[in-house]
Structures are given as structure tokens and as C-alpha cells.
Image 1 (cartoon, rainbow, N blue to C red):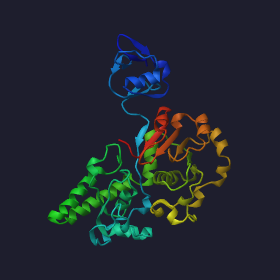
Image 2 (tube, helix red, strand yellow):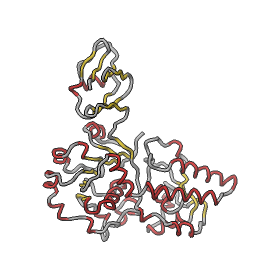
Image 3 (cartoon, one colour):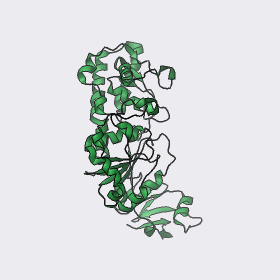
Image 4 (tube, rainbow, N blue to C red):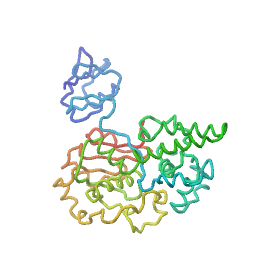
Length: 366
């Protein structure tokens, strides 16, 4: 692969300055900052194997001789829910619906009255619909809890959601549910149509939105079938994306996925107070058997990294601490280190991670 920038008459070869994946912005000033050797008074293009790329941001993977308009190692991801939290088919049809719309209104703290997960789930189970919406970010644990309890989300802003955000969510089915709810005020509720749609949404949730399915999704995207995974965390405070995805890998691999440090509130018999967990711990806390964490592996963590005893390494949050990254990056290839980003806003080293060739799974991006 030969890479130049400049004009067809005067081009500078920058092939030797590119290693792995590199972002090449079309902005002239940025090109000068990155590659130097400016060509004054000339519009600049990028030429790759004599193909011109003008006024477009591109990513070049020189190792694979490929050009992308989007980072090839960046993937969307969403929250998810443990399969055991999804209501079974028999219960979902036997529970009597008592209200059209749930009393729980996002952002209205006076409606946040549920102290137990059971009470919270029952509110959705006895409601035909439940309002959900974009808050700080588009993705929200509430979406999945509504679906899991045989209720249908009413999500009035769904048409405005960016394509890469909530990309694993059943957006088209939710658009149908919005119409069904809005038609209620004009025509009354068509219960047969409602039940058909609820079944489709429950089936979709089981097939795509469980923690296990999310773990499988990550491995499919990076095309790896590991025997052992090291799952690293910085801050151990509850974090939906980290906690739910780790639960999925534990479901998939048992103690062959080692979390370091141990994320205590995911395990049974933990002693963390409910009010000290995000969302009171509903839907994720205390689900894992303690034998799914091998305490002995904590003692040899650095040796095991140096000896590459794990096939891949996953960081549960790009924003919340990257323990042992120096040693991991010394012994593991960039594409053997995966990062998750579950934040609403990004003030992190996202671009550096991408340019270094790591995989990044991001919850909120356009």
C-alpha cells in the first residue's frame, strides 16, 4: 500500500509514518500537524494506491491494505439483561393487565417508589405500556426491564435516535409500539395486536438482548473463540455496561472468565448496601455463584499476563480506570485487548485506543 498526500503534481509519501490503523482527517491543518511537510497554497488530498480521497475522513489499516470511512475496530453495543430476569411465556399471558400506562415516569422522582426489584417488576407486568425516553443517553436499563417483564415500551423519541446508538435494540418494533399506544387515544387498544407485538418483543429480547447474547456478540465481532478471558476493572462502583457484560461472560465461560479485581456486588451473599448500587442493584446484583471467581488467580495476575495465560483481555470501562494496561500492552497484541465504553458522554482516550488498534465497543455514538 502506497499512501501520499498533497496534489497529483506534488505529493508527499507518508506510507512510512503509518502503522496499524490510522485516522486521516481531510482538514488540511490537521494533516500538517500530524504529518508535517505542509504544501502551502495547495488543497490536499489523500492518495492510496493512486485512488484519491478528497474532503472525507478516512481510516487506513495498512496491515490489511484496507480503507474505511469508519473505524473498523469500533462497534456499537447496548445494555442487556440477564435471561433469568425475563418473564416466562406462561406468566406473561396469565398476569392481568390493570392499566394502559405504567405510573413510573422517567425523571419524575415522585414515581420512583419501589424498594424491591419484585415490586418494581410487578409495576411493569401489570401495565400494557411504560414510558421510556432519552435522558443523558439514549440507552437506559429501563428499556430492557420493561421488555423483560412483558410490558411494551412507549418511546416517543425513537425516530430521532442515531443509527449507531441503540443499534442492537428492536427499533422498528418499538416504532410499531409507539403507533399502537398513540392509536389507543383514538380507537381504544387492540388487544390482539398488542399481544402479537408483545410476543415479538419478548422473543427478540431473549434472542438478542440477554447478557449471554451480548458476550457472544462481542466475540463474534472480533472473530475469536477464547478459552480464557481476563476481565479488568478500575473503579468497582456499579456500572451497567461493565456489570451486565461481565455477567454474560460468566454465563458463557464460568470461571474461565476471570474478573480482576472481583466485582463484589455481582456475586451472591455480598454485603454492599442497596442504596450504594446504581439503580438499587435491580436486575444485576447478587446473581453469580461465588465459585465463578477463582481467588487464587488474583495472586498471580501479573505472571499470568506475562505468560499470556489468557487469550484476550477485556476492560469493562474505558473511562473508569485501566489497571495493568502497561503490562497488558507489552505482552498482548492490540487486537487482543478489548475496551467497553458505557458512558453517556465521552471525555476519554477513545481516539488513541482506536488508533492503537484495540477493539472498542461503544454504547453512545452517532
